[in-house]
Each structure stands twice: as structure tokens, then as C-alpha cells.
Image 1: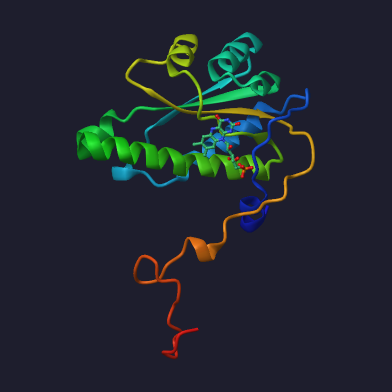
Image 2: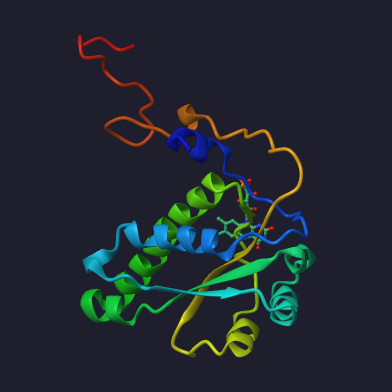
Length: 185
Ligand SMILES: Cc1cc2nc3c(=O)[nH]c(=O)nc-3n(C[C@H](O)[C@H](O)[C@H](O)COP(=O)(O)O)c2cc1C
């Protein structure tokens, strides 16, 4: 799939078909995270791919979002910031850990889109419950959760924020860029 098409068509899906995707396709999507940028070359994520229905039910309860139960798989993304904190101190270690998790996750989401799979980024959950259920070490963070399956329905029409509202040139608030000829467009 063309990169622009993947970027533009990636969307959150909350309805899943009962047909189960091939887990090897999901592994390819997870593999894509390894190529994302990482501070000091420290890759900090680990993943748990869950297809046990009972565990998916428990995860659904911890997220309080019923649609998760219909997914064939749930991917739990975990990070350990300790090496980043050792290298960069507590404040920057934590900051970099969160930033690089987001970068890695976007690679995963684009690959999910390319494979015609569906998911939704879940950031709301009770971390303690997830950790207990999946035996995740206390020192790790649960960054995000992704129910995965074949999605239902047409793609939602995207209505991204106007570039004019978010892009400035040379200083905050300046919406005009000087053209190469020296006059303002
Ligand atoms: C950090 C983060 C946390 C999110 N948490 C949830 C969540 O707990 N439940 C949910 O239904 N969607 C969640 N979403 C998905 C957003 O609602 C969704 O991305 C947004 O509505 C834009 O839609 P789109 O992904 O189709 O472009 C989360 C997204 C992000 C980036």
C-alpha cells in the first residue's frame, strides 16, 4: 500500500467480525515497531498478544469498553523506561519513553492498515488490573491496548484539522511563509 493511502485511511474501528485474522500478519505489524526512532538506541517496548477469550474478557473489564470483547486478539503494549532513565535522568527518561512508544505505535497502526486489519488505540484502562491478569512486572508501564480483528463497515470520512490552524513559519503565530522571490504569498 502507498504510504499516503495508509496514512489517510488509518482509522479507529470498534466493530469486529468473528473471523479470526492470521496471527502471523499481526506479528508483521508488531515487527514494524522495531524500525521506529529510539532515544540512545534503547528500544523500550514489549508486547503481549492475547487470543485467550477469558483473558480478553478480563482486559475488556479493565478498560470498561465492551466492544473490545469482540476482537479476535488484543495486543498489550508495555514499556520499561529504566534504561532511558539511567541514561537521561528521570524526567527525560519518562518523556522519551512516552514519545518513542507513540512513534513505534504509529508504525504498527500503519502496518495494520496496510494488512486490511482493524484496531482502536485504547488508552483508558485500569493498569493494575491489566498487570495482574497478564503477570506484567510492577516496574513496567502499560502504554496502550489494541483490540485487533477484521473490522465492519465503511471507512469513516476523515476531517483532519486545517493545516492553517497548526502551522507557523519562523515564529509562533506567523502563518505566512516568504516565497523564494522575497515577497509574501
Ligand atoms: C492516546 C490515545 C488514547 C485513546 N484511548 C481511547 C480509548 O480508550 N477508547 C477509544 O474508544 N478510543 C481511544 N482512542 C482513539 C481515539 O478516540 C481516535 O483515535 C480518535 O477518535 C480519532 O479517530 P481516528 O483514529 O479514526 O482517526 C485513543 C487515541 C489515542 C491517541
